[in-house]
Length: 300
Ligand SMILES: *[C@@H]1O[C@H](CO)[C@@H](O)[C@H](O)[C@H]1NC(C)=O
Ligand SMILES: *[C@@H]1O[C@H](CO)[C@@H](O)[C@H](O)[C@H]1NC(C)=O
Ligand SMILES: *[C@@H]1O[C@H](CO)[C@@H](O)[C@H](O)[C@H]1NC(C)=O
Ligand SMILES: *[C@@H]1O[C@H](CO)[C@@H](O)[C@H](O)[C@H]1NC(C)=O
Ligand SMILES: *[C@@H]1O[C@H](CO)[C@@H](O)[C@H](O)[C@H]1NC(C)=O
Ligand SMILES: *[C@@H]1O[C@H](CO)[C@@H](O)[C@H](O)[C@H]1NC(C)=O
Image (tube, rainbow, N blue to C red; front, top):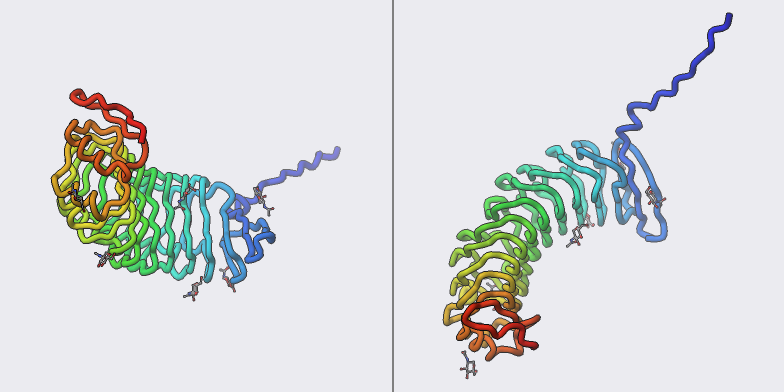
């Protein structure tokens, strides 16, 4: 009377928590897949890519002293515990295509990171001082989230932000002093594909902007100060509701502005004529949809 012995193989509960990641060594031909409770990186590694589901980045999960790229894309990341990046030295952090909903205030504090890519999450809330003492931060990518406002209070001591991309959000307004946190020169600012209706006259101030993208918004009025108080080289304002420009705009077209995208705005006929004086600076199709002016789609 032997009782059959049944072997039950239980999945170890610990293995379910292991983080699976690929490391790329300084020699890019050399890659390896690792797993562990902690992502531990020695100094000859160039890139770490988290491979599987990682709902939370918890404090203590990282042991990184010197890394170029840390990529946590499309792994269902929903939250990050304060402290997880403390004392980590990572040049480029990408947390794109996840399910983050907020950026709390101490998470990125004092990091030496140069690029922070938070594109394609569900972020609708950023705490005051979320980006504090990030002295080397140069590129901040917040595109494809659910933000409705931009506030300089998110920033404190970020003197080197040059690329700021908040395209494909739900921004409705550019308020006063909004961009005071940016560096002063060579800026690339992308606010395209939002719902901006209003730009405060002092929304942008004392900035040298290489490229400003305001395409695909609901802008009706272009404040004079936008072009007189800043130096803008490339200005993209196609797909808005602009009918007219302040007079000073044409003087700026004559000097600092080197390229303008303005198609798909209901410009007044007289405005189209004035703009065409600078036709060599107009980029893209020159299409309008104004009742008074059926000069649609002139080839340029
Ligand atoms: C690591 O795993 C991923 C996904 O399972 C795979 O695409 C990749 O080729 C693996 N890398 C190496 C170096 O084995
Ligand atoms: C962190 O990494 C160092 C070496 O870089 C190692 O000595 C230490 O054990 C690691 N700590 C953990 C918790 O993995
Ligand atoms: C951080 O890494 C950079 C190189 O990527 C290195 O020059 C620097 O000394 C590191 N800083 C610290 C505090 O380890
Ligand atoms: C940010 O990450 C997204 C998703 O991986 C990528 O498409 C985009 O090019 C990145 N942006 C920058 C500036 O690296
Ligand atoms: C903008 O750049 C010019 C030189 O092209 C420089 O003289 C000026 O000080 C800069 N202004 C700001 C606000 O950085
Ligand atoms: C542009 O500049 C030229 C000469 O520099 C001047 O003749 C013309 O009137 C200016 N046009 C506008 C609209 O300011």
